[in-house]
Image (cartoon, rainbow, N blue to C red; front, side, top):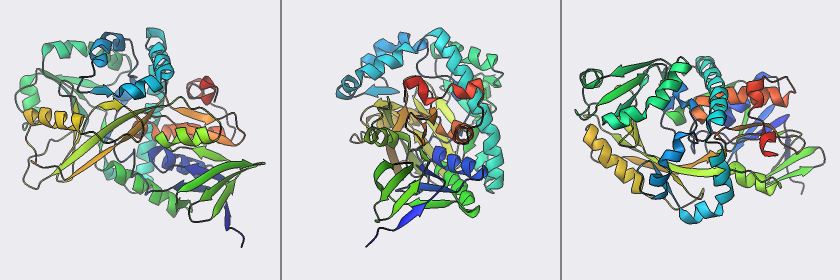
Length: 418
């Protein structure tokens, strides 16, 4: 009996924020798109997002400040950054490559490119959310970075100078102003900086689902199916689905976040991707007093974002294998730190842990691979939400062979000879 076969102009693998935006952008170009994921849209890495879309995400982690922080990081006791030694040793070449980008000139160039991508994505988020009737998901709350000491406040000068350079509006808050802005915070903060252009997301997973519903309403196909095999058969890409069906297309987009690495390996392409594992806990209570905007407690190494009837508390990262065993160490630490800052429900109602995909230069890879008909849109680290729509726009232009700007070309997979 012949295996059922389906066709599409282009297949997008991965239904997180980046994949769904890619499907929408390609659909807008007039292509028949099939979006494929084994899980519900927005239920993996995108679901774990802290819930912030902000221009302040333009500064890559591997910047000149990294060298000063290395001794504390190597001790492996930092609240915001941990690593698995066996994993680090297995990826030592990629980590060394990562460090080579932490120079002043390289950082300035990457900040410029990321700023353009984030700014464009913010504009497109507003268009997409209006079209998908979910604009209420994007709340113009700004977000508040908090510092518990003068030393940590002074350490933020590097970031603030960059914000000023790119006209990212911030407002400095003293102790009394912090108390006025967020009256439910404890009086432990020396200074605060309110990033006024930031948006907070009521439900990161919910926003992705709203986008995919809009895509579906416009005739897009979403197959919730695991893919057992991807292969190139002549001029066609062929996906064998777990339900026995076969999906074929001349064009394939890998937008599967951290899963893109194994998929690439299976196709003979070595994607130099690192994994940053992280997590969040949610605390619900009808009785608790909520914070009004997301806060980033720099010394406490956590982000707290208001959600319906509670908060989402996100921790830092651990360099480790994508599917490493869950560890509660950092989540336990940041929960204790957060309780010193404000009160919230005693017990978490849910917990998530997962991996974020990081490239050596802390920028996504967007564009054609060396294999005919294969494109990448992956490696967005922590900023898939802040860069998803803009990345999709670049991807769609690339697939259609349209001219890219110099800033858009900076994300090409060719920089890693992919």
